[in-house]
Amino acid sequence: MAERPRVSLVSAVYDVEPYLDEFIASVEAQGLAAGELEVIAVDDGSMDGSLARLEAWRDASSIAMTVLHQPNAGQGAARNRGLAVATGEWVSFPDPDDILEPGYLAALLRFGDAHPGVEMLGAAIVVLHDADGSVTDDHPRAWQFARGTRVVDLIDEPEVFPQTAPRASFRLDRLRATGLRFDEALKPTFEDAHFSAAYLMGLERPVAGLVADARYRYRIRVAGSSTVQHSYVDPRRYTTVLERGFLDLIARARDTDGHVPPWLQHLILYEATFYLRENDRLISRVRFPADLAGPFHERMVEVARAFDPDVVAAHRGESFTTTYRDVLTHGYRAERWHADPVEVTASDAVRGLQQVAYRYVGPAPVERFTVDGTDRRPAFAKRRGLVYYDQLLMEERIAWLPKGRLEVTLDGTTVGVVRGGRRLRPRAVTPSSSPVPAAPTPGIGARVRRRLVPSLARARGRRFEDAWILSDRIGAAGGNAESLLVSLLEAKTGNPCSSGQARTGRGCRPPMATGSSRWVREPGSCWS
Image 1 (tube, rainbow, N blue to C red):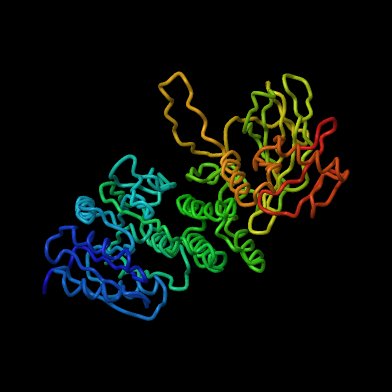
Image 2 (cartoon, helix red, strand yellow):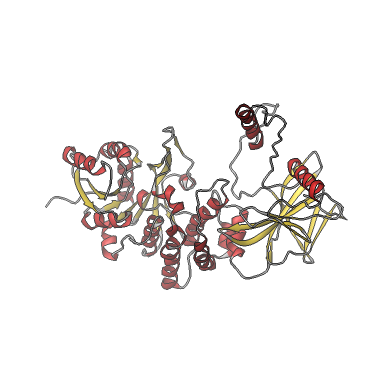
């Protein structure tokens, strides 16, 4: 019998004909010796020419090729079918719209040979932008490879996650021994991470290799047609992924030793951040059916219960803000809570003001602000409902106060004050060597005015010649446009609430939506 291949590549193929040539070329260029590589391509009911291209590749290639075809059943089912016939020492599941850089497989095999006790390998990921062909090293997981190629123990470094199935390699004999397979009902996403996490949980200790010189180019399609990009409009993302993905891993961990290890919590926190971030996008891809809100939040309650507050506080995901930290730690707990410390998030040099913000659950705390030892009322203030997928999870208080030494008391207790923005891991900024600061980049309001006003004038002649455009800042109170609009409404109607808003004792209550606000009129101040 011939020796077994060193590595098996199992690729689930569905309607990727425009990208196949680049993928095929990258595999052919790996340069492994004859018999070291086998490729198993499973066409999952493609409607384009993908199957014909795979068959042409098989017929022309010197690589050991198997092409299978099945009615469309999903990535998990296609990978399981390929896994069943794989024979290599290592097996990996690259996506056929991505690219393996030269030397990718050789680097993985070198590391595996040098570390025979390591049973999972993770490749470095770079981003291929389909729009212009550029390649960037700015994937949220790129920081894991900053220390180069190494063995990592997830117990010691719980924020590291080696990689999901397309960019990870697994010992085939261990997969055979454990019977681990992809969950074919876990759709439309997370089956990759679920498979990798379940594999790690089956090891005596979650140890893996990070191979920095094995680079995997992950493609972001300009058409937004990949499984991940399209998943935001799939209802199963808000039910099945949580049930069979997050909660299944949590249950497996608890069945093993009664607790959820920090490394698994960090993985789920990383994935949960995408839900919150997508909800917060100004123009979201989410079309969230109202009947999914209940099931989604019921599952999120169970997911949030698995998070240790200390683990959440330590999480440093690229997009993980302090707002997300508070939402996932306290938003799903039926307990009254307010932040400690509060944050100074901005300053206004012209007005001599500083902005302070804090979040809370339940009734608004009784607050007291002291600046340089003197009690001060906010010059401007508002309350903002933090609504995620049609449910109010907590509220945020934003107030502008005079600059100076600030002390804050909430419900009679003095709380800490920290300064900084919302990003927990800010990107480093290189100072300019020039003593003259560069001109600031025009904000979105300026860009809108420059483009919209002339276009309206051209389109409608002189109809909009005297029109005004009022541009508000979503995260700050007391802007000029905001104050002017409220003043005009109050002058005209006596009620500064716009159509559809209710006038309450504390101001206007708009229909609850992402980023909505409850306007508060502070005694002695203008509407803000």
